[in-house]
Image (cartoon, rainbow, N blue to C red):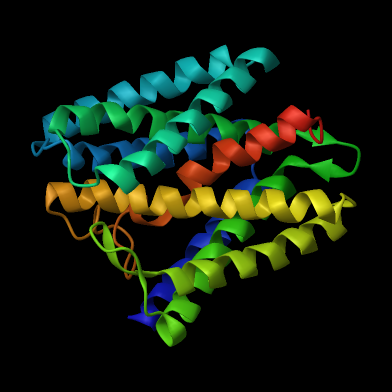
Length: 270
């Protein structure tokens, strides 16, 4: 299974690299939109929608919201507002995980798909178009991906070798506190490397990168919470060894808004 996961991850990495560095920004934004719309199809299952027609309708509604949010965030104040609201949602999701992880309703799950999917699309697509001096959007997006992957890989290997204390047993029994700490240490290293590469202060980038890593864990656990409530092991079967689209991008949906807010809000990129 690990070999299959690695092969799939390598293929996905090549597709992402090509989309970021070979396509024009409009096509890259379209690609992000297509991925998040496919994620909406899977999210519909969390809300109890089983028929193809119902899932297609939900995915179409999310696609419309993606388009409207893209146009609305052309103004920088609107972009920052959306990102702040998205981060507030993820803080609320964390509290949900801590205090009431088993309380769900299908309609509420469908509604929650909006703050999960829409801001993530806006953050990724806007980051890809951003620039300042030598810093370019595709590299900024790639740094985000490295941070998220570092959190995942570090947690996986440290958790397997040293993990004992469960992080969120009601939501994701396989995750441990030791793994989470290992993931954050790996994130700190990647954040430091990015700071050196982009010429940014490491004293700011490392704590910020760790905060992004924490949000990525919240995104992962939140999707697991909704899956468990819906009685699903995976969100889908599209990606061999990984499950569905959401199983691969759940961490990014939470990390991207905070990451974009920090970079746009601080003026590092415009």
